[in-house]
Image (cartoon, rainbow, N blue to C red):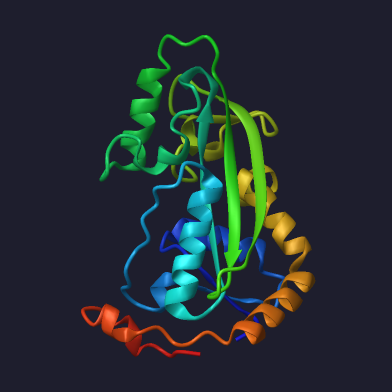
Length: 227
């Protein structure tokens, strides 16, 4: 129980990144797909911090386990900070990565200032509410066209200042070393021993009751193993 952390995501790309970055830890990393369908939180926060905590605490409460959530996005100076917290759905609720990149490139067509940065906030929440937070940032600029085949999201149009090429032109190890999520998770990994002590204390203090399954009778996730 004290060495399990659930990643509050079903995004396979994010899960792969997190597991790769924490491969030397004895923390058992699970994700939402390990537990089946469950109600989703409303991500209506005004900041990345707000949304990361909303997700982490929601799933921690539902599962009765510590949950680690991230909220991240692309902040473009010439667009007054857009896409920001709306990065994942910038071109619409069901938009693909391709759609989002195309909308961004269209809006940046006549912009001379192409500076931008990725931000990431990690929130580790316990069922009772207490949470820890880490932040990461990487700077760069928006390209005029797609470059590279790797990565996901805005990686093909974000030219990393550190790498001198887009994230989609870099391999995962290179990207993780300088990315916003990689930097936030590196801080998390560096404090893992303290985090495990903190989690043990918080979970033993709270001893949270199991969720009321009546609230989720239409789902089958409650049949999974509960701690």
